[in-house]
Length: 146
Image: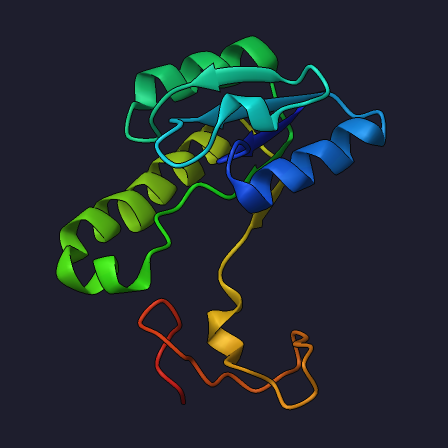
């Protein structure tokens, strides 16, 4: 059964795609190529160029490939731009993620892995962050410190 990776042509997504493929797993990449590159796919992974806002196309992909695992790396990530153009970021990072989640629920996806930002951890004194590290956001992409 294939794994669907959104944003799999971007920097982090393409490294994950490479590891999955080299582990012998079937990977389908869904990317709009706005910041990523098809050349990042080096092991013959299938690339579907599309927008997460296109729910009809998303449903076609799920119908055709029946992924039970989705890894979501498709997001706009430029912190200063998120302040200057918040509607773009809301549309892409929030609304499009909801489109993907709804499609996952509709097609019975069993595992959904969401990649966020390490910016929530700031610059840890130890130099390495873990999920137990305190949140000390260094830019608007991280949530408010509580």
